[in-house]
Length: 356
Image (cartoon, rainbow, N blue to C red; front, side, top):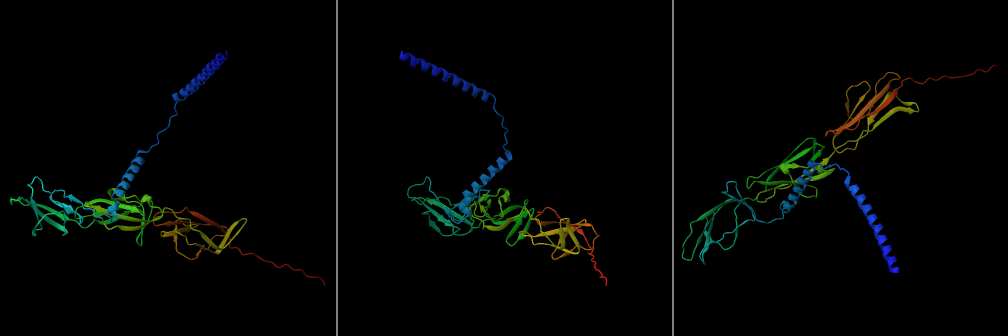
């Protein structure tokens, strides 16, 4: 009997559990049948830009060993016509015997010089145009016809230059740059030709400058920009260092006024009132512009005290002013106002006469 009760309870628990599972499954199916639509907000242009930037940095890391001048590897590349081999200083010539008789040797002559037996890869000692003549000779003194290779030992990296456009102001050793400034690297190599142009910001990574363009959006505040390039046999250009400081905003100038009075009813001024502008802390060259009531055009403020001049009694006088630098950054226009008061105060003496 006890076993029958246990079995019944187990069946009931299993039944209720199955109902609950079905209910959960049903609820889940209802939820899945009505999915929430999510708008795809991925920007294709932004993705392409990020991908290109990653590729540029990857190329910079790959060539950083040569850009930093730590490599002593030999490299060579054929000219477009396939008639001249460009090599760097570390390249060595290796000549291999193929299909020859045992005991054969290779004879070599450099630049029409004396003939010597080839034993191991040898360097090219003369910069510029060179010619290697070589042939194999077997033990019976059967001689192969002389063969030759023209090569050019390229010892120098590309010559760098750059152009800057948009908003910029030259400084000693660099530039102040605005939001729309652009910088492009030019490189020229009369030997093997230019492989790539690169740049890096501060102690950051070398980045490939595609089409010579430098991404100045990565410049924050004041930075050092380094430019370099590699030719096709990995000779590097002498790095160019430029100081760049990005300036994208300018503060509001502060006006100071003398001989003005302020009370609960407002600010008052007179023909003796003077105003001037405190020195504004701004890295790039700038000017302060102002105009008084009745003037249509702003005038540049130089220095010293400026008079309000004679005005109509009781007239509201305003001074509008702003700052602007040579990069096109401009502060909001501010206004200072006062009421012209040139009426002097009056006094009167009151007295009494005592009767005798």
